Length: 208
Image 1 (cartoon, helix red, strand yellow):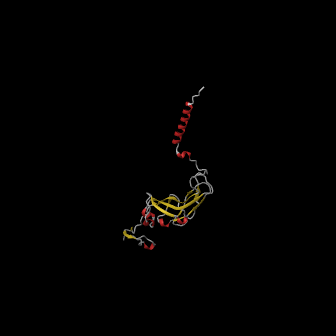
Image 2: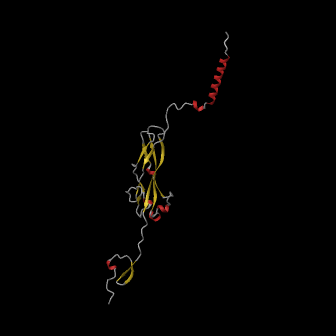
Image 3: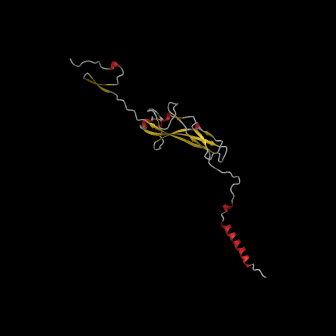
């Protein structure tokens, strides 16, 4: 008996053609294996918290919404050397975190409420002279380097760190009058502020 092999040959040919077609549509990247080391690159560690500034008295720390005196001048404020307000942080949970703020390069930046930086003249004048009964913004800037001993990347290098405070400026002082008009015993006269009792005119009756 003779066996018909025609169908078998056609089947093999069809399979080969199908394999070739499937291989031609598979993206090249699909056959590239991932990194054999298994290392995953996450996020670099950062710092969180607040930097501080000091009031003109040299000891009082600036707080948000602080009300300054009528004589406070921006140039009298300084950067605080205290850095306990900022701490290292890693969103990926990496460990061995350390943080180094470069306080030698720290600066203060003053801005109006609309974000416009204060001019040199405004920095040298009392705040109440230019911004009475309003607010300004005080920013403390410093570069900070944070590192970790695990994970990748272990650091982002020096990164700018900024803490902003709203500073309230009081109303401008009411100017004192140069002279005061006083009427005593029927006599009207203008006198400067009396500093001594003997500066008052002698009291007496105007009647005969």
